[in-house]
Length: 99
Image 1 (cartoon, rainbow, N blue to C red):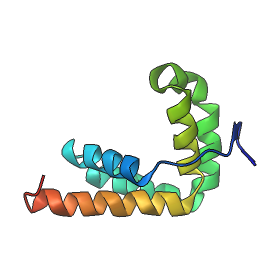
Image 2: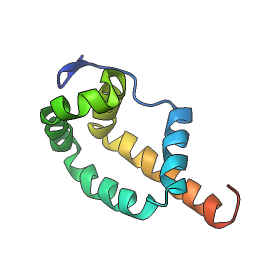
Image 3: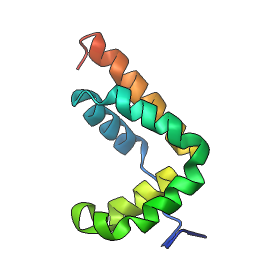
């Protein structure tokens, strides 16, 4: 099945989601990222299409494989919710001092 311009690709694995969430928490961007993800969740299909339009600018910076996965993530409210829960778990452990 085709999603946007890409063939349906596996979204981020659980380990990759944990890695992304850890990076976000370590950089202390948890609050703004959570806010942004919560705002994007109801508009996930639209935001993934807007993402496709901005691809020419992002492709040289990120690479095709990561862009495909990110577009897949943005098109799925369930995947966005999974990332939100991983960030919240990471933030909880970070605040407890369990880096």
